[in-house]
Image (cartoon, rainbow, N blue to C red; front, top):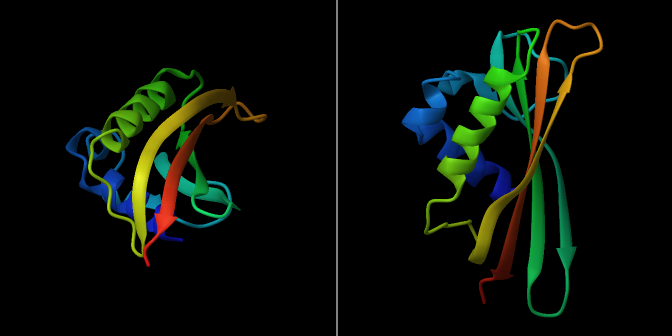
Length: 127
């Protein structure tokens, strides 16, 4: 949860991201987009070992367009916004946080383009 909150806040605070997607179009919910452009903070996963943990989050970029150019531009702006350091996650020391991949597909109905951006954070719980 801490990763999702921090990622959402960082994206909403980025002028480059909000130039492409309004801050109120960045949210955590399920379903198909109702806006022409939005970023939905989607699935997450946590993997633990004795000392470190790895948290994953998926960002879904939706753009009402027939091509993929704008969704790729938004994904790039997300990557740039998320690579800035340092990261403060509530309750954790963050050792590394980065975008690890981006995939782009067309909506089956052809109305939207869909970018899927994977984020990974290596963290340690605060004592």
